Length: 237
Image (cartoon, rainbow, N blue to C red; front, side, top):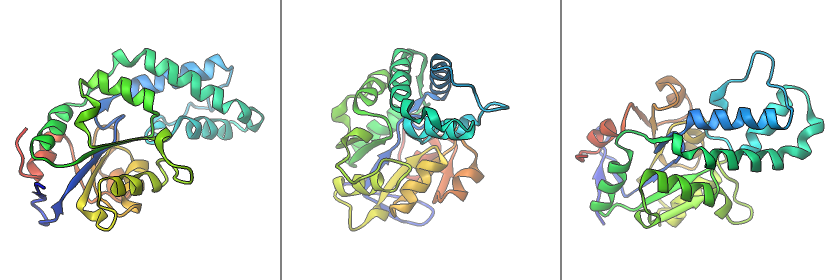
C-alpha cells in the first residue's frame, strides 16, 4: 500500500475519504435554489429575514426542512418533511447540469488512485443523487474503493452530521483501529465535526466556509484548494 505523508506533522495517511457536495462538486447555488423552490411548492414561508444558507451545507434534506419548520414555529407540517425532501432531491437532480466540479477535485481523486491510496466517497446524499453527481464530475463509481451514500448505511448507523457515517467509512477502508490514518476532506463545519468525532484526520477545504469556522469545528488543518492540499501531501496534480 502506498503511503502519503503530511509534511507538517509527518503523519502517515493510508486512505482518503471525501465529501461530495461542496467538496468535489460546487453545488451550493443549486442546492439553495432547489430548497427555496421546495418551500414555495409546499407553501412554506421562509423564516423572517430569510435563513442562513450555510445551514444547508453538510445536513440531510430531512434535517434541513425540519430545522426550517422549527424556525418558523410550524411543527404542524413536520409530516410533510419526507415529501419535501423527495421533491427537493428531484429538483436538485434535474438541475445538476448547473453545477461544476470544484477546481482540482477530479484530478486529486485520480492522482490518489495512481498512488494506490484507497479512496472513499462519504456523502449525505442518497445513492441515486450520488450517482448523478459522479456522472457530472466525470468520475466512475469504480474510481472509489468505498462508496458510502447515506441510504447505504446499515440500520443503527446515522448519517452525517452524526459521526457514525465517518466511523463506518473508516471501517470499510480497513482503518477502524487507526482512524487517524484516514484523511477526511470536508467543506462544512457539520462534516468536519462528524469526521473529527470519528477520530479521523480532517482537512477543511474552504469552498463554502471560512478557515475559522472549519478549525473551530475540529479540522486538523485547512486549505483553500485541492492544489494546496496536494502540496501539503507532497503530490503533484
